Image 1 (cartoon, rainbow, N blue to C red):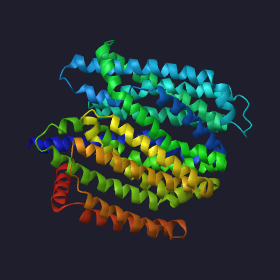
Image 2: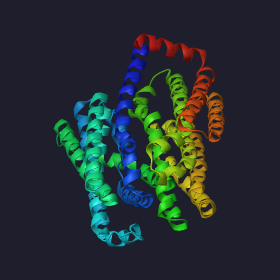
Image 3: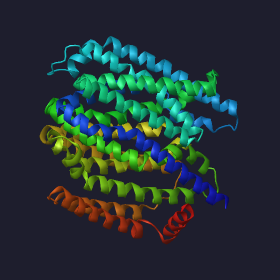
Image 4: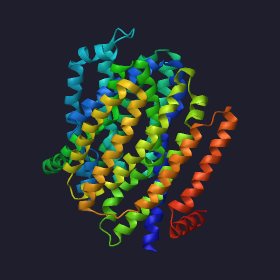
Length: 486
């Protein structure tokens, strides 16, 4: 009974986190019709490259990660210790990111000339400095939200997610639609809603933790986090460096189309995996100490990956229909890239699940090894594929790069904590997802007919997942849970 109660709590929390994460990422969905009608693909590309620059600086100097909160928060069942962990991680992160902002501020003259090359924007230096301030706001948002997750307060997480959505939509509509500021409006909007949201979250966290710093905890967090920082920087280049190659070998318009397609990869993560991972990232450390930990890890993987692959197939199948409904005519060609990027991110989800052994054993240097090796091969793929195939070459390079990263992380992680996952079953339904997506590519029909045919394909795939991806015991558990929930 106790085990069932724990599973029920995990599922209930995951459902609430699912709502919160979907709300956070729904900004991209809500704003897509506005961005693709009030911005040109070139504007979209400039905004994406500007965000890239800020993130690069954040990863270079952002030594402490939110993962440190989860790693040390549960070491002691002591409220004072938990508060001290949260505030210590927050303070060190804030000070480091302040240094990062100073770097952005004093190099804005050079970075703005590259970012706004070929545009009619004259105040690029000021815009880079304004957008760069979001590096500070990231800490004000990310660390308190991680603290809320560690506290296992999913309802509060949803409330702050709703607040972020409301602020983001209001600011974007005001600056882009009402003021008609185009890409400048994007910059003003991101600065404004990030500052307000960060200030509110910081006020909440400090009211709970107080000012309780620990030098020894800071050193432990730094020791734990610096390999993660190195690997995060490498992974960031794997994810975003392709935009720089596309800008160099093609143009900003191609960057804009590719960036829009990549948004679907992020939306896929937000819908299929991020909600569960918000709870699982802290819960898995507790599960690992249980006698039947291996069984729980295997069962959890089967159930989550069945859902992940349904989402991947669905988003890939309906990509063209979604763009026909939501996006402007200049952005329609982005649909050709979406399926490849979404399926590439399935490997990213597998990596996140399977690298637990590296985190649990505190051997985070192996994650750094995997990410830097992946970056090496990714750059080779970029040089080989992007000059000839442009954005399509970048999407294919992303697919093979994330597959390689998964293989490396799974191999090293199993040396420290072998979960003995059910790979034959997962691979079988993955191949089925590829086949269904392949069929959908050849569907050329009016929107309503296309939607109906694609819905039929997705339903057929869901039946495959139910009977092939899940064992008889899995199906019984799902059925019983649905009955109990009703």
